[in-house]
Length: 617
Image (cartoon, rainbow, N blue to C red; front, top):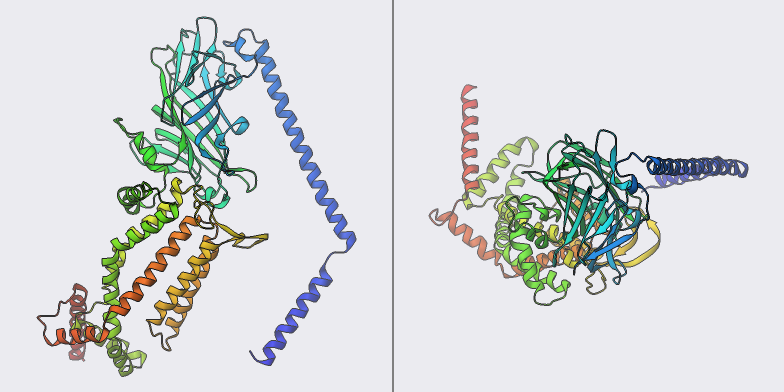
């Protein structure tokens, strides 16, 4: 940088500082501006308070109107006191409210919250609501406004009864079974002929829930929390996890799931859901919530009471084999295991049949999850080693032929001779039976296996709250250093496993670049710097990712570097070149690759075309 450039930059800096100083507002302007913002905040607060009072007044008015309307079908059910009934099995504890007859709280006994002491509560209080709408000619009966009476209660079952009179009622029955997160839920009308519209053979349902932030890392939990649904006879689909989203679904649905990273609340119907409207809204970081979910749908209902409406709830972990087991014995599969994200179809297949089974086998040894991931990485690297070796040998053959390629490059230094140079290089490869693309196919073969574990680790609930070395939870980031401020693109912490992964990738890049002579080629020099830039970008991208994932990425890269060093030390390049020369002299020994044969055919075709052009002249 010369003197004039430095002077120019200094003058620009002085101008910017001076402009900032002169254009800053005065104290009076700042006070006026603050007063303006305070006024806006006060107006917004007053509007919010008025809206809340208006909604409360409307609700009170509605309750009073229903309580005084003696002709209403469930007149006596519109007044009462909300009490709670608890049912449980050895896995889940549920609380059912008498108002609305709905499940008001779900707690998982075998999983703890962020404090690692209190069991995980998926929702409670005002976090969730569920309203069923029944109809007759006079009115719409909304169960959310009615008080139910608990009957036939045991430790694991309860029937919530909405009574029109002593002989006519609608029963909501919840039944839990041992060793399962599935809850049976049935709705049945008893002696309601003439009281409910006989032409209306469906019940409308309104279901809402604010999904709590259960894990430490908001960013990654938010990324894997999404409203998911299963289309009857088809695959699963979902609303966007990164923005507010809503959708009207015309197809019949087997189930709808309000999903967190590791846990889900799923509503299933034997006779499917129809006329479904779904919505998912983002919750602000720091609010204690991830998403605000809502679903409106309908399912079959027999107002005569001859047939019960059968549905189910699933309140439990997104554990692949736990969810898969729920399909056993069923003619039509629910495929709830799709709630566990395992990657694209091919990668999901590898995870389903290989990764999960090996992971469970290693976990059965009683090892720490850090050691399980280490052995998993070693096994994966061993499986893909033949492809790795073939890729390396292809690059080694290219490397020992590089001096001959350099001679051709010097022979044709001009740009207009690029075609001739390329033809001669292709001919050289053909003579030695070397394919420039020989390492690509093995790389493509090993890619799904390497990516499978990368996709599996963030969804593995087994890593949740499992500590290893300095990381107290492999399912979320390891905040080795916490900053008292927020760094753009990085956050307010630094993950040590992410730093190790970054450093290892930089060393790997440096080693790979040393194997390639970029020379004075500006394009190759640019590619070299891009190769160094990518690991640094990963530091910012993966800093919020689970420490188990960064640990696997670090191990995988470290093993790759060690493998390449060992292969380089054990490969005699002089002997390899001598073998290529011998094969060239004896065509019977030379195994020509398909790519080399195609190169030779293309070369002959180009030569033929050039001869035809010369003859025309």
